[in-house]
Length: 298
Image (cartoon, rainbow, N blue to C red; front, side):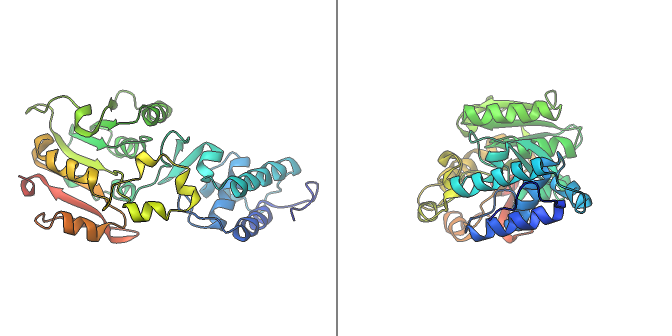
């Protein structure tokens, strides 16, 4: 039972109360928070108008009855709808950067974000280089690239116009309209015909890759997201086959393509046994993200 709104409470106490409430509801996580405690911090931080990490410096601050009421209302909505918290709050955080979020696009999350921020991709990001974010969705990876490397030009494309509207809003929010250009269309069809002047030094891609069996078993939180952004066909490789087939036409001589495949390592190996992929280490392990150099695709 929720405490009476008039009851004095610190930020930390409210976080603990909400975490217990969420824990008891048997929710699923993975849309910007890893567990009930993380989501409770996120809910409370929103009422403080702080980021979740900033809220950690205010744990002993008094949390007003009005703030308590609003926080518990969010928790109740999270439990009753089983929607990702990012959709309820209209915002998500990726690598400490805030992004507008709506059900028009997938919730911002990708292991590629770690590689952008930790500098692992610098070898493929020359000064004044051209980078493509294929299947950009909400635009978060394109934005992280632009923020990390202010001297590169970023193109970003997606087949979903609703997703691109979210991306445009995020690009504007971060003041990157002159550095990030959006394209609408089905994978490579969204882009101008490749020529020697418009090739990419790096292509990053977090495509729909969930195999059909896994799609059918996903928790409700994932079914709240656009299926178009998740489903990758029987073996999860439908779009990745098309991506790999045409990538050489769009890569510079020393370029590379970076692809997130999540839990589809075995399916990727079966689909592309001939490709000498370089597996990149991220927090989830060494089988989630791969890099292929242009010379190994030709």
